[in-house]
View (spheres, one colour):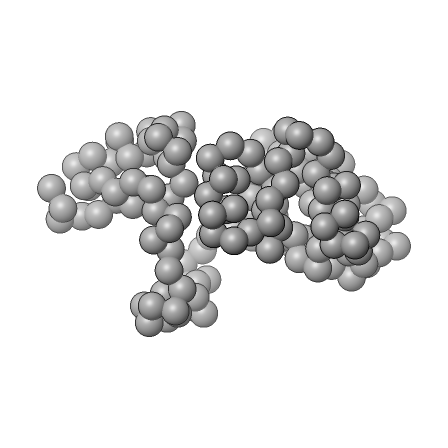
Length: 152
């Protein structure tokens, strides 16, 4: 797995065993291509949701690859259409909807997939506004913030 990012989140990905690319240190498309021997990644997930990251995601994918867009762009952008067509790259928007984790939830419940390394903060329900602020502002290196009812 190759993770493109910066800062504390990228450092966490490295501690979890991912190959990392700091997009502030150079061209992330070139870096991913280099790490994949020029082929590109079979699956690319764009969680950033910027016009530039979406374009880069398409350029990082290898021929016949798939790009899943989970970040919500708030600005218009353009996709490299020629690359999409000639290399038959699939781009799909993905939303977090109820019932979409049916495969992973049983794995988590059985202890086969752990999210504990990603959980950086836990708040009581009465601290919801502080939890939301911590998450949105990424305070204290926040990655995943848990709001737990009944832990007042």
